[in-house]
Length: 203
Image 1 (tube, rainbow, N blue to C red):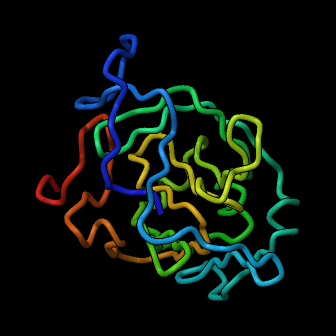
Image 2 (cartoon, one colour):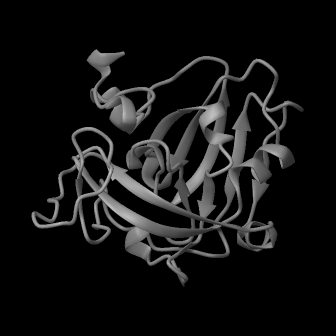
């Protein structure tokens, strides 16, 4: 459930091309809304629902998730609280793999990415289909820790980090935009850091 709560940048970081308003941080901070969930592996499911192409709901258990082909993506993480951690290496199934296995209906335009405790984030289907977006299970060669989203965290590198919830539990296809947790609280529906799309009044 990563999102807008603030974390401080490193004041003496080397210069780097960053999105407007961002400063470099040396490490990934532990930020989320609510407690860290305890994994119950026998009950864990990733649910794909809503406006699916076949009208059905689909599920993956942990074994099914781990059996999907994997990619590695090296990318910066941009927090809306104005800090960026450079050169993180994420590993896990590409979101495109999920979209191909359980495609959205032709009129689906958006998704809600659901996480534990009812947390959600709004994304466009096109953003979820980015070749660099993934269902991350590993970070910098190690399995994600519970604080950073174990067993799976959505990572969409070209958007602010709150668009990639920790502890991902569902993808719901939508035929119209629906605002998620932080979007309902005044944050931008798209969240492109290079356009500095932080707040809903900018829409």
